[in-house]
Amino acid sequence: MQMKSESQINIPNHSPQTVLQQPQRLSMLASLAIVGQVFLLASAWLLPVVSEYSLVSDNISEMVLGRYGFVQTIAFVIAGLGTLALAYAIRKLTRGTWGSATGSLLVAVYGVGAILSAIFPTDRIDSQADTLSLSTIGMIHVIVALISFLCIIVGMFVLTRTFALKAQWRSLMIWSGLCASGALALFFVQSEGPWVGIMQRLFVLMASAWMILVAIRVRSLAASGERDIPS
Image (cartoon, rainbow, N blue to C red):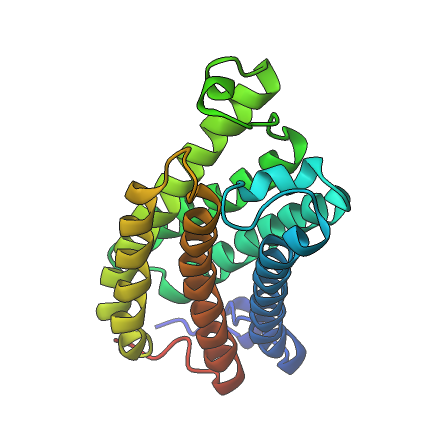
């Protein structure tokens, strides 16, 4: 039998630096997600204090039209980029498990929706009648918001099942399910009424809390190097 020489054998060349780069990258992406969600929550809950819009009765998107509206626009962009980063990290850490690709994609759509909300701002809505006379940009904003809200709800439920199948994620399953259920309930109670602002903020709070919890788990797994442990 002819033996292959060492030069003929393909041996993967993974330097220590290459091995370390992946966990470090995932940790950085998770940190971006946390910063983005904290920024979004801060702008959504605090801007009404200095704006002409109300915390209780006005949508988060309407903060863009008010005083310091640029802060809300920046918050949408940063939160969107952070959500896309988190979706990528989730996919990398759950690849090969049921729901990994679908759940990650749905989370990514929510991130894209946040960025598009900054590009296509809402119209001013002071009454129910205003929702029937939206501009083209305003209509795009409404459609994007609806699709992205539905996607994050379904994505949270799908990934809750995914987490249940992964040993490293299993302890997060209950919290993930609670956030998903809370977001679903709040989605249905939203309406263009006197409480729309607070209901929408609570919905976003559920989604953001879910993403922050998941991002913290990503950072933990990246730090411990456990991402390749079989479930």
